[in-house]
Length: 466
View 1 (cartoon, helix red, strand yellow):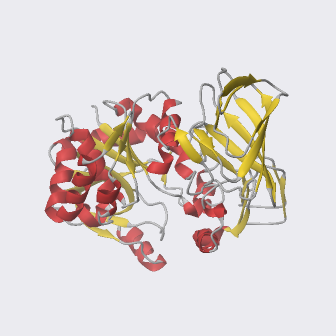
View 2 (cartoon, rainbow, N blue to C red):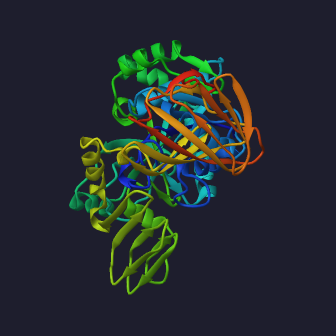
């Protein structure tokens, strides 16, 4: 049994702010173990895979996705880049077009990359059980056996029988009374968002029910630019595509929708309370990540970079990052998205960026700033280099803390070692490289009238940003 995994990695994870942010969302974070959620998703399905996964990701996350997969042994995934988000129906269509581009027609195992599945063996057994139906032309989804009258999930009503069975209907997220009636009646399952079907069957049903979506995706895929492992969908064509989910566009309309009920320890980790549920807890029900002390406190979740103490509190979520602190009651964590909306309306960067900003060459952390100056800590990966660039409004002073820096400054190229420094005048063309085998770390002091990240003129760039 071999399938073609499709990992959907386009989400922004705003309900897990401040840890998850648009530029570094939850699928790239190690929230439920030592690996990130994207890595865990791949490792769960790797034994079933005929080849490297097809990943559908936001264009801004391309290097995160590629690097994280490389760290778990995937050297050449096909990473389809969405210039704008258009929901799951177009994303899966783009993956199906990529899967069939060479003339094959594989069975696609479509998985969100930000879910937890505790029973990986049970999950793989379920895929094996559903595979004959998918090979025969069915569009199979996996329904989660409900453990509670959950109001945060959609439900699937299954027809009678055992194993893979017809879908009678998909239903929206219910109120508490309706959810309880579903559990009492039986035959209702949580909608997991995981699917198994032949690529050609999905494309055929999408063309039947939403030909406008398929036409737009075909145009975007046909005009895509290939850049190594990256398939960059055409921006104009994809932006013109209607936004719709696979459920609305196909699964609720097709006569070939099937569901396999499974009990695999699934959780979509869609909120801080959901993350508390899947985290290891102490004898008082507290889940702790980092340097956390809990005294006379129960059923709380705390994530800390620095020391955080909980005293006499119950059912709280406390999340402390370098530049933001969240304190919320566990019953109110869905309202975190309202905080993110407020940050966006106020045009505050906290909705999008962490203080430490990751780039394909490494990262930078703005550790101090005031009128006319900014201090950054910069890390450059071994063998990486920044673009050849200049600035119109700022000069820079670089002090190497660890490693070796190769510096280009106008016509000069030279190396700096620990405790050595150099000055980059305003307007000078410059580049920073790490020729060593270890991480390069340096302190950058900027001075000037404007210190925004958009004050960069790029002349050459190995990451395609010039």
